[in-house]
View 1 (tube, helix red, strand yellow):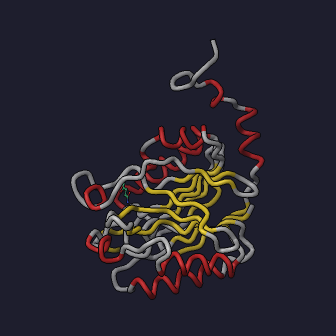
View 2 (cartoon, rainbow, N blue to C red; view 1 turned 90 degrees about the vertical axis):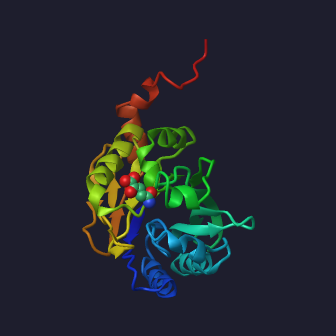
Length: 263
Ligand SMILES: NC(=O)CCC(=O)C(=O)O
């Protein structure tokens, strides 16, 4: 299964409409990949808090529409990263979008753990409540977003729901890059799953982004890692590795806490 992570540059100088067209073109260029992944809030910037309300869009808004067309044109499964989703009630969510190769929006995931403590996303956005997996022909995706990476219990819930490939779009800052790479590999090892961690490049709202998107295999080995700038990370993954890893080293079966057993 060929995957391509588009580590998008998100800078203040580029208007959203221009970035949307540019990213749609990059997605179209990935024809031949099975799955393409974009980062978190790439249309507005994960740290550009004031743009959450002004840039929020409905699920049939211009960003979703452009991504549906790009997925259809490229004939790829597209995890279009997340957008600031404007709901009819006015609440804004940090919502990931997954499109089929026919351009259909097949699944959404509203970020459960909001970042910012007492500011930013934590106060400006609503929290998701649903653990979301997406069955693809070759694997089952488990969806998480950025700060979610710090909460291993979410990933265990995803694995219990059948996830084999954990997809984590992010807008992770450079100053905590060490946590990003460490946690991405940890989530792969402990859940014996592929991890596709797609971050942003560049600087927005005075926050330099980490880049260094990662593809990690179920043994925790880094298959590919991006540098700091805009980059497309492509790898051919052997999806049988998930079952093989879980069989030869059955640690997931040895869980004691939180597992219901007969008798
Ligand atoms: N957008 C985010 O969720 C940022 C998360 C982050 O900076 C961190 O966990 O550290």
